[in-house]
Image (cartoon, rainbow, N blue to C red; front, side, top):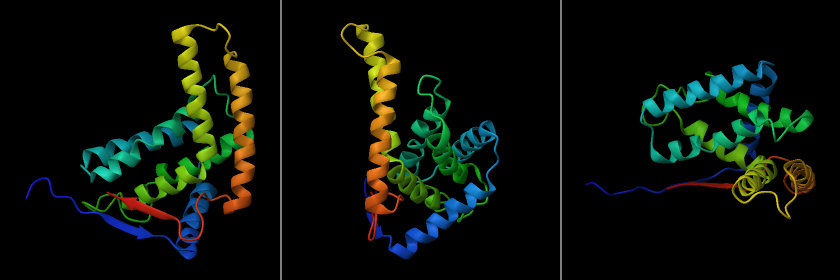
Length: 188
């Protein structure tokens, strides 16, 4: 029957989160230092995933990788040091063809990627929020001009400073993994 949907909901326990964090750590430890290789690996994974026609919740999550890739590549954002390393470490998982569930398995091959995207997005929320605000500010400057608005450089400094404060606060609340005991992920 067309139009029917199935809602699948599950909750990740502390042990589950620790398992996924170990996988992220493994990807980080094995990652190539070549940023371009990571970016190209993600582009290849996304292309293969879309070609495999995965469920909609997977394609929705694949789009969440774009801001992470963009913030690394964005010369105006100037992401550097530990901030850059944190994002690249997270992206390394998606560039690794050796993930938890082989991607070639129809229907479920990208579920682990979708879960990991949600976890990474939650863990990098301060970075994602600050970058989204920066991009919006840049678009405002382009559309309206710079009258009575901070320059792009001033905005970047303020937004990255706010990102650091939020990152520090989130570490103290969640151990830095974004979420906490009982962190729930819902797929509709």
